[in-house]
Length: 397
Ligand code: FAD
Ligand code: DHB
Image (tube, rainbow, N blue to C red; front, side, top):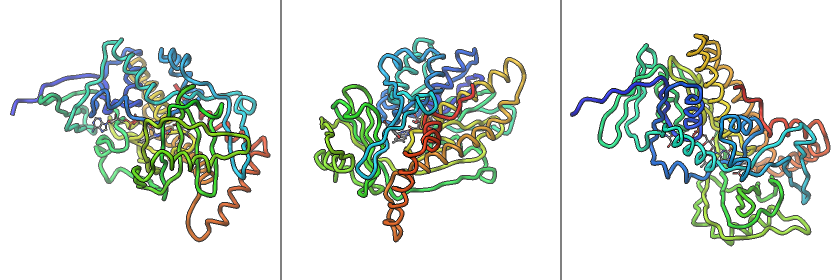
């Protein structure tokens, strides 16, 4: 077998999803050499349909870093959301409650903007790498081993960042005895669709219904994104388009309001889980985004948490190289785990409040949820609590 070709960089980033690509872009702008290694091909990473809501501070960061042009011209600024239950729709006005807002802009678009920036900077990720192995994180010579195009490489570096998502390999480089995982599975998932139809509401509608949760979201003035709570592992083949629209109609129904239908051009079922892996740093390996934590999607925190992780990591790496100051890197795991548990709290709270649960207490619990929601929409303090979390915890950068 031919020997491995040696490459070197300062920061080796495993995973070219939003976390990896954004960190790479931030480091490039700070003059820190880095390489992104991505398992999939470039088109695949752009075509994955995922999150759609960007928090206030995430948008400020992307804008500051030269990634805000299309976001601000094509994204949709939303000053609130609607909560729907017991046949009524209630507006939660973020702008009035906390003076902040969110933007609707698909994760696919964020990834496209990042790839365009990488191309413009001449720093494209290495796509279709296989056999990725993170080694030497307890030594002073960490490296990432990988193959690409039939050639074997060893990428020597100062730091490795594992931004390779929930199914990635980086996390597993931390010895099992030093790792603790916290996990919670839900007995339902989300069926999500994209449809060519103008959104039937000016802002997102989160609805609790006896038949299950429904969410009306959007991607643009002509594309709607909608979700239904379904049993986990539901077969998408059992959901022809008419059944999906009928179920959305039932769960989102409101007197005098119509849900506009259109051609469904993407549909999938996503399982729901909470997951946190600690610590987020071991030796010279740092974990970021879904590699370290997953939240249930109610509240749209997944992508935003990944952005928050890499913003702080950039700060820490800049301090390390420019000022020989490791305070931020040394506290990264503790800081982001605290943030992550706060986000888990919000996502769990939203999920429990808005989904239908099964079991012997289901009927009672549904009435408690109605009581909880009635209190929420009647209290400026409770609404401000939701607004503060939804528009996002501060992103330190
Ligand atoms: P990822 O986006 O998972 O990126 C990780 C990257 O690493 C991928 O490109 C992967 O191909 C690559 N990779 C994996 N293994 C390796 C390896 N061994 N070597 C090299 N590269 C590797 N969040 C919301 O807020 N709202 C939503 O509606 C929503 N919907 C979602 C739907 C789905 C199906 C999923 C999976 C997630 C969803 N999320 C949603 C969560 C959100 O999309 C994630 O939080 C976000 O993608 C995290 O970004 P990341 O870069 O950390 O991870
Ligand atoms: C979307 C996803 C979410 O998880 C959410 O809470 C709101 C919107 C979306 O994909 O549009």
